[in-house]
Length: 431
Image 1 (tube, helix red, strand yellow):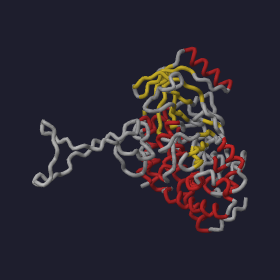
Image 2 (cartoon, rainbow, N blue to C red):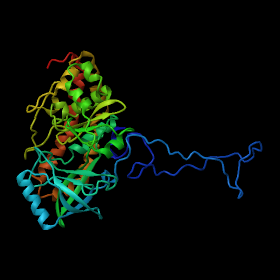
Image 3 (cartoon, rainbow, N blue to C red):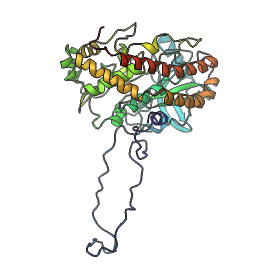
Image 4 (cartoon, one colour):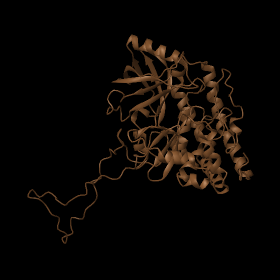
């Protein structure tokens, strides 16, 4: 099942479902070929004056399944060309923005594989900030709040200098989908600026209102970036439950406010990958939480560009050589440290045991062989665009090496987690 999810991350779930348009509404025509028995003389079918069957029908559309389909701009089988056209003064202003560390929206004309739309665009990045190769957030609704492009308000155009494969996010998010967790849709795109090829990027769905509508029957809860900044319902601004969550000091208090099953499963999948720059590792900026009205707070994966370790150096070596063998519970980012909520919840023996079970469930969908097959297919898809990208801060040879390294990493991580699970004794946690 996993390889099917990896091949079609834009599908709504690992199960096969009817195709949908960009709004997530099924476009499969109804089946009106059901057999009837015309010889049954005891049944009277009402007709109108023309002889047409006038039996009332249930016109209520079926309830949507979740998650719904991704927007078509994330089609994994398409390497789209995204052409950005700037006025001379706006392109010059973006250069000043980069030098000054500013993230101000600038007007841009976007042509997405020939489909044109006016939009706004700003620079993106923290540690990944680079003025040699910009990264962007494209906003389709910055001027008109109701405007959408293929159902989207925004999309992220990402190419951090430390992902020499261009594929970390593309390989990571489908694992969350395979586990039945919220995830961002992602593929790759070629970007042109003012008519010239600029570089290869990951094209990543941003968590926002449309993301919530794709994943949840009730999308009206509060969404918080980095667990703190309110991204929806800003006009109400009621953060009472968020404040109560961060004021909690016991596992029982935390459990009363969160969706324990989803949260432990999300943290466990980050641990399995591992996501070296995300919430599980203690990094308190690269994640979202959603206060699901039906279940409580849930953690959402985001910005997974340092997944499976990373390849930040021209040699292809990783910043954290131990990435494949880090402990799924206790490892922490050296610049951050474990989050208090994580430590408090997993200090409870029962919650710790449940987390270990979730790591085992994450390992069950982490299939190194299937992942290697998909990696090779997507690496072939982007190979020419990667080679032509003269702004990438590494050589094409380093890119090729890093893809091979990533393929080997999948199996190494799986072997380590298998041994960790077999050894047992993870609980109680010794921080």
